[in-house]
Image (cartoon, rainbow, N blue to C red; front, side):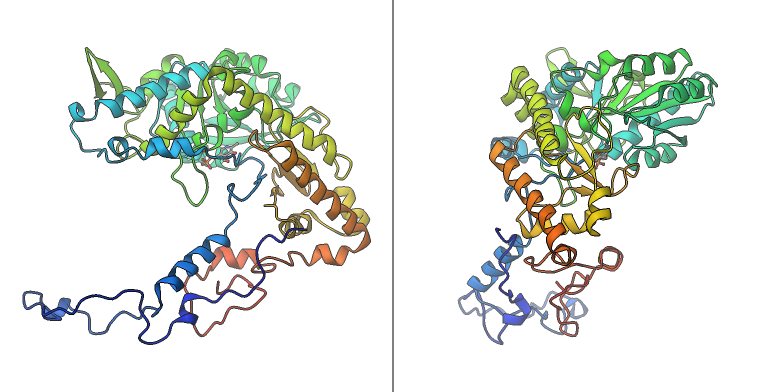
Length: 501
Ligand SMILES: Cc1ncc(COP(=O)(O)O)c(C=O)c1O
C-alpha cells in the first residue's frame, strides 16, 4: 500500500521562525529609514509580524505545502462529472509565448491581429467539432455558459412575443442547470429518469404536449454516464412545440469525433474547455465555457464578436439582438489558447481516439468493479460509470464515504461521491482517456483490497484515512468556517477537525 503522503509531522513556517534569522542579506544603505516626502500617517508604526526564516526554510515550507495537495500530476483523479484529465505541457508552452501571454485587452486591434485570429480559429474548430453554427468564447465556466445560453433563449422567446418560462431538467442533472435557469428568469421543472437512466419518454411526451415548455436542458451523455439515445425524437418534440433544446455539453469528451450535438438537433450548447480540451482545472479556475448556437439564436450571441473585415480581424459590436457582454473583455484568453493548441495537436483522428478511449476506460472499470459494487443501471456506460454501495453497506456497514476515505490511504484521489442524487450511495467514477491500463488496474486493485477489508475488518475502513496529513475532517465546518490563517492559540490537532492547517 503506498501512503498518499508522508506521515512525518511537518513544521509550519511560524513554528520554525527564530528572531533575527533571514533569507536575504542586503548592503548597508545611507538612505533614511523613512523618506521625508512620505506623509507620517502613511508610515506603519510596527514592522510586519512575519516569520523570520532562512531561504531553505521558505523553500521547504512551500514545497511541503505543494505536497499536501493531490493533483492530476500525482496520479489518476477519477472524479466523475469533473473529467480530470492530464493537461499536456505543450499547451502551457504555447500559452506562455510572450507575444500571447503579454497581450493586453486594451490594445488597439491593429496590434493584436494574431490574438484575434487565434480566437476566430478556435471558434471555427468548435463549430466543426460540435456541428453548431457559431460560438462565443466569453463565458468563464460551464455554469456561466449555461446562464449565457438560457439568457439567449429567453430573449429570443420574448422577441417572438412568447412568455413561456418552464424549462424541463432531468432529475440526474448537475446542480448548476436549475440554478442557471432560475438566474435567467426561467422556471426549472424536474423530469424523471426511467429505469434505464435516460429521460422517461412517455412522461416526457405528455409533459411537452401541454405546450408551455420554453426549453429542455439536457446533458448528453447524462450525469449517469449514459447516452440519451432518444435525443433525435426529444429535440423534434421540443421543436414541434416551439421550444429550444439546451445541451449541457460538459460531457462532450465521450462524443468527440463520434457524434455532433448540432446534428442531433441541439440549439444551444456550452462546452467546458477544462473538461474536454485539457485546459487546467480546479483550484478555482480560470475556467472557460464557450457557448455554441444554431439558427436564429446566432443573432443573440454576446458582443463583441471576432469578425473578418477585409484583410483585418476586428471586434464587432453591430448585433442589435445580442444579449450584450457576459464577461469583461473577451474570455479567459490563456485558456482559449491552450484548448486550441490541444485541438491542433490532436487533429480529427486524435480527437476521435479521445472519445473512444474515454468510453473504453470507463467500461473497463465498470466491468471489473461491478463484481464489488451494485450497478444501478444496466445501460452501457459512456465516459463514466456510477456504482452504488447498497450491498456493501448492508453486508458490512461500510459506506461510500468510508470507501472514498480509504482510497486515499492507497494513494488515489477518491471519485465523486453521493452524486447524482438519483443513485443512493453513489460512487461516480470517470477515469478519462489519459489513464493507462496499468493505472486503471492499480485503481481496481485498491478497490478490491478495500472491499475485502470491509468484510474482514470494517472498523479500519470506517476510521480511514490513516496515512494522510489530516484524518477525517468535519467537512461541513471545514467548508462553512474554514480557518485559513495560522493561529498560535489553536495549535493544529492530529485529527484536523477543519481547524488549523
Ligand atoms: C454536467 C455538468 N454541467 C455543468 C457543469 C458546470 O461546469 P463548471 O464547473 O465549469 O461551471 C459541470 C461541471 O463539472 C458538469 O459536470
